[in-house]
Image 1: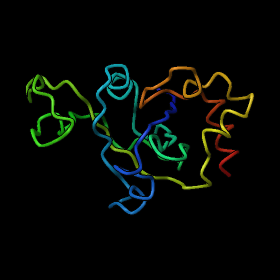
Image 2: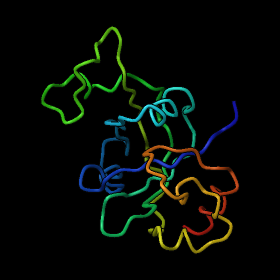
Image 3: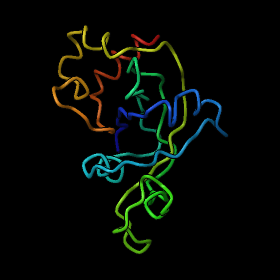
Length: 154
């Protein structure tokens, strides 16, 4: 299967790219996705080695904070079973989990690429992230968008 590319949003107060860089093996579990389309991208589309644009959202200056890669196969998100977790789902069971997690490994920090700058490039005008009303926390990135962004990050 050909390598694919993704943008994954994280609130930096929860998990920042610097947190991933300082984690064991520079790897973290991607948990808490509670949108079926985003879950399906993780469960059905992602493979070890796929590229990830690690995006900081719900912060003062949203933007791409670093480059990562998918580091595991998808697995049931443990937070759905934890009654103490804000991601708990009473309808999920271990026999029939509803939500999927995956491991992400930091690759490169580069420079922070703000959302405002992303919007300024005509080459990215069709990027899903920039579409009006786009709120998914996980979305595919086209190969030409990936290459363009890597050049911007340096």
